Length: 398
Image (tube, rainbow, N blue to C red; front, side, top):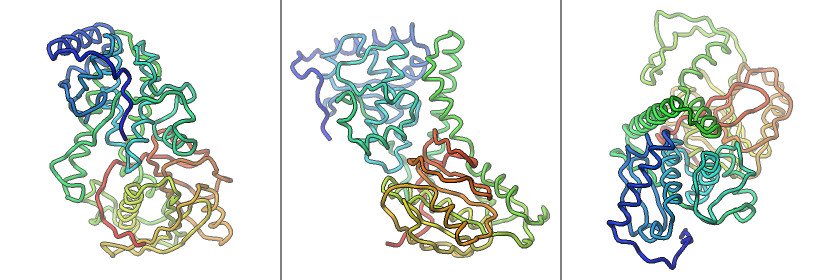
């Protein structure tokens, strides 16, 4: 979607003038904003006449000469800080198949509030609305999709982020590892930058909160899952023979001699807000868990109501799943279904994007929420953020 230019009738500055402005802006950021400076100095900044404003892919930053020619020095500082914050918050890796333009706008709303708090000056007309203060980009995206962009202040995206290009294709075995390496690199950069800023006593509260939430969300999902299953499944275990099916995932589970236990349930959020990429992520994780459980599990598809119930069986390397839904979102029907049908549930894992506030009563069985939104905070159960990955282990049937 084309962006509106903020000051379209400006005299184009020479490349030498623009380079000098970028250098001066970088120097002033270095002196007054250590967190942003640490990240900016690691990324080359180049002019690109094919873009409207500015953009980043996590490793580089590009700007439009026409756009920068119409900005003050303070505004250029704000735009550069805006781009590095996209990198620090992994926005180019967290879109999970969402509408790219809308996701970009949601991220801009979050970033711009942090930048204003940090003392930066932003160009006039940018996406800036106090209603979104303290929200994650995922939450803002949900509100924009629900209410429309025009319901909030600002019309202009001052920068975009590009999806990173990796050596492996999304369907190749090495793709997930490349993404994981990129995430680790960016986390390390942000951590080092935050340390430097703290040493100088210049960390905006909003920035520290958002980075803290993101760091918490990147806890190893597999480790949390293994601990959850060990605690919930009433099995006798033996460490003589590890479960070889899961060793390649980096988890060494003990071999199990199953005693009588209740059923294990997957609940999939299949509401309209769930993209195909999210759905694939949910199903890929479910297939891995199925191998861990080593017994059939019940799968419940739910949007605003339970739409389908099916069973997955271990041993099938490419199970076919039949998602059904596409409406609104409510979590309570899943728990009501289990209660109404008197299911003997040992544990339930609910895969969701977190875009719902209707939970119903807390069930008697333990719940683990696998969520793509790092700020998701349900009234009960344990929460862990799903990893950003696009491996395809299973078949999704229409």
